[in-house]
Image 1 (cartoon, helix red, strand yellow):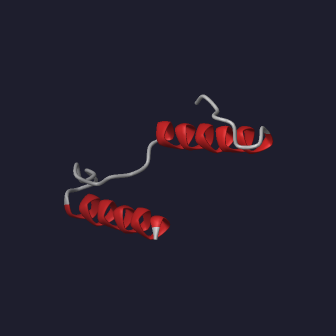
Image 2 (cartoon, one colour):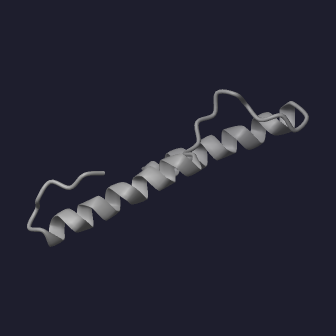
Length: 59
């Protein structure tokens, strides 16, 4: 479902750009690079926590 939401937003952005002469829609929500970096940091913290028997791990 998460990927479907991203694809749906991408389709909205493409349609808006076609209608507006190449300008993207301002209300389209995409994950940013920063979102990806934070997601990877979370995953790394989960792995560290798992290796420490579920101990709290600082992000």
